[in-house]
Image (cartoon, rainbow, N blue to C red; front, side, top):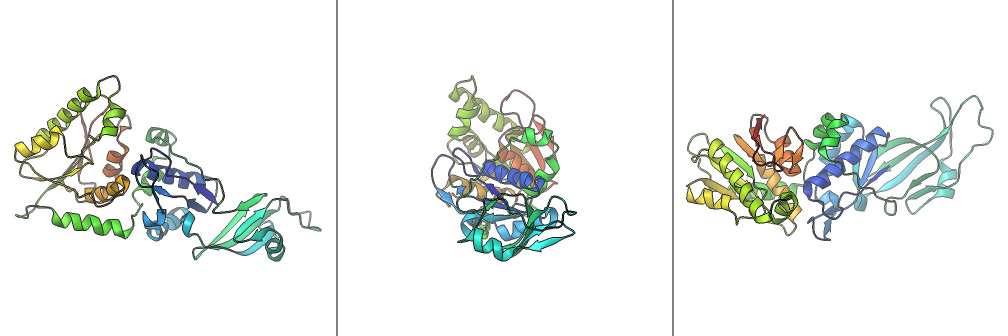
Length: 352
């Protein structure tokens, strides 16, 4: 059993999802079959949290994870754990020690085998006997071979954060697995309903076939502080706004729809769109937590059917991980326009 902590201080939606996926990948490589997940941080800058099962659709995610990788995720605060059988031995020969283990090492749904179990008179021809535990967790039957000592304590174990930058993930040859899981993270139905409700309120033109473009407008204060580097924050914001406006002029016609994904509406890009007759919509901020609203925006991004503009460099693997997240889950026919937020003078990249 692997214990994953995703909601560390400063982690936004995407970094928490990356931490979750890396935990799954590490657990899978170590032959764990269950990843127990701690709380989701509602806002990167606040100590406010939500159970992970209220954020993602765990059952739907597990359908994919079990079928593809024989691994599953469980909410720390919604984990029903029960031991079925415990055996000592090898694949060829094993002794049932369920009663002994339950009587001596299992209490209040905690299994703590803190001393090495050795079965007397165990046949010597069977080398390196191990403990095989069959247990039920949230209705799923799991069978694992574990090394001693063994401790399964869901509420009190140490939960580990395993965030890893995308460049490192790609360099370690894990890109395919990472993106495969990323595309199969499903969110709680509450977020899906909110996103659909917001989309229905948008003033979209339905004259014939309409094209919807999405722009991830990464102009929030934390982004300006983080990426301004040696440039003054105001100067950097102005340069970043000009970059967005330049790309809009090149790639998005005025007669097409635009969905803006951002936590702020007070910037030169929005002014430009308004003054020049572009048709755009912002999503309503339905939740208190910024990261929950980011989930809604993420779901809205999947309405894109023409052009997506994001602050991510597909070559250097730098920039907004949220922009990269969107580019991975929207329709493959959508043209993605990415730019290097660390070098705004460089040319944008276009890809599908």
